[in-house]
Length: 402
Image (cartoon, rainbow, N blue to C red; front, side, top):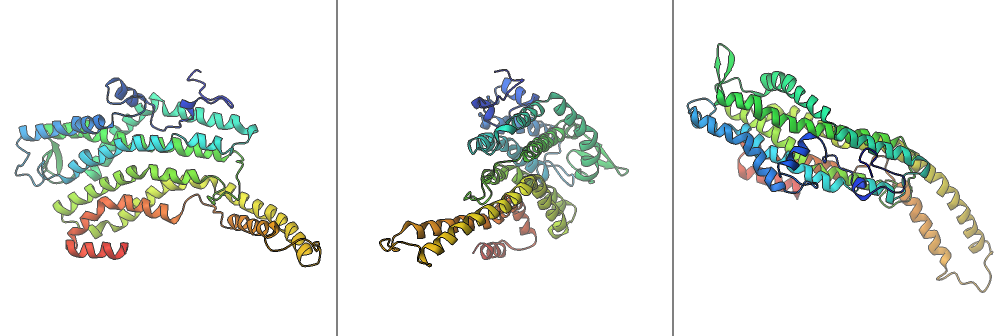
């Protein structure tokens, strides 16, 4: 089967039903050729060690060479908390998140098909959405544009104006109010930070592909079952997809915690100064990770209304027959009520009607949102030690969990 036409009606090959946001693009091919990955994103330990070290180790060497490893600067290399968290913790998380997302999302297409959610007449639209997602994921032009964006905006605007410290550091000195980079600084600005930002923006591009795919599928009239026990018409597997992004959410928490830490320790800021930014981070992750699932809300609401109407009519016919038979003398004299299947059928019908009544319009629940917030805030929790003693922090945490 040719890769240019990856999906065929009722004959979708197993590799192509493995929906993956990460198995594609020039960087993925480079990792495969350099033996840092195989076709299934294994060899993770190699990537977790080699890639961060390729970025961070030259900075270590250059800072020692220039005498800034433990120098007299306000922020020496060894004391740059933000640098080490970004490159030695957050970057491995961004890399490791690829394997987690790949493994947890690879059967999403099979769930749509196995549960027969896609009507036969609309199968071609589903196949077109898959083909379009794979084509966009494998686009070389997209990654080239990401690199251009990183250098034109990520470095010249974001890092220069908001991330880089405006004090003497191991990578730059402030002269006449301007930042002058040294050798380590040039490696940081030209190699280290751009590569880190590229990995991050590449994730946003993958999320865009995911949102676009969900939107296209939501335009199909899905064959939802209102009585499905997941209370989401059979789409419960989509809720579990959010857990696949746990590592990505935690990486964002690490990035933000690193940003705050440097400003607490070296510019006199306080953790509470960033309370609104932390709230914005949580809202931002909710928008990019949870909100896309809301594209199915209209169909879920319609399925619930239709289910209540249809099962309401069925229940009306049944209870009328039940009432006539058992309360109005319709049953024969030889038919015993005790142990009769009619009462069990009435109970089953009531249970089915209750399931429809509990059907949710939104394919998420409170537990999912709480876990997403926990993953994000976990890296920020240690910074609370800057505003309260460790014992008090433990007491507050235990009181919350108790």
